[in-house]
Image 1 (cartoon, rainbow, N blue to C red):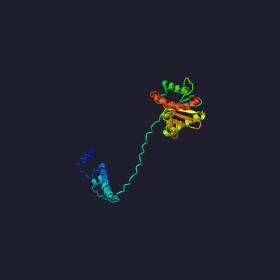
Image 2: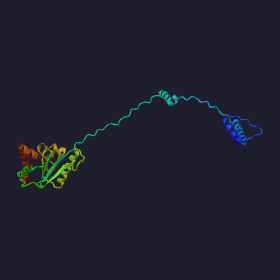
Image 3: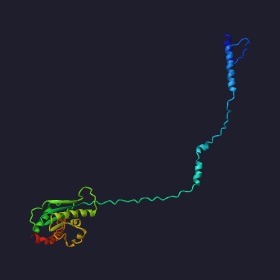
Image 4: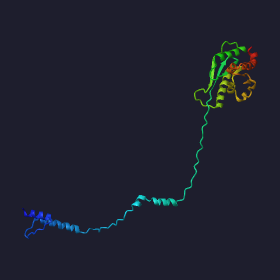
Length: 251
């Protein structure tokens, strides 16, 4: 075995071996030289001395608390904030508006006579229309059948808004417009509903006599409804008493 290689093996194993002075191995010399340089580097003091940092024990409880205790103490020392009463807005309850539905049938019997009947649930049936024809013939109108009927109703269209005063104003305006366009001497109002809705509050105070002057030219007679005269024949006598006021005009 080569002596130089043998020497390196023994040196690696930590075994010292005598080497004659006159035998110098290049690798050994190089290794010794490297160790000397390394030793010099290690022993060379650094330019700045190392500062010894003292480690303080970490207070885990303080880290977990995160200063909450301090906040509690500070809150205790704070003056209490005055409580301000907040005024709540008043609750306004909408009063449900009662829907008003009324209908009236109009017949222009002649140039001097207009008939208006309240529609009570349904239009006048055959019996009611025959009774009205007989009444008109009794005062001298001389008709075989009723003329074309005009229907006036509230609401004028579905869900039309309006309270009682607005409904009265609407119906009163229609009646006055009709009389202005075609004036008549007499109007027969059949049923309490016709008088209550078509006459103003002042005129309704005069209806006890059954006769109300709408204007200088027009007079309204307040008669029982057609249905009440059929159900209660005594109401026909009431109607006839009022109708006699028209006999001089139509006889």
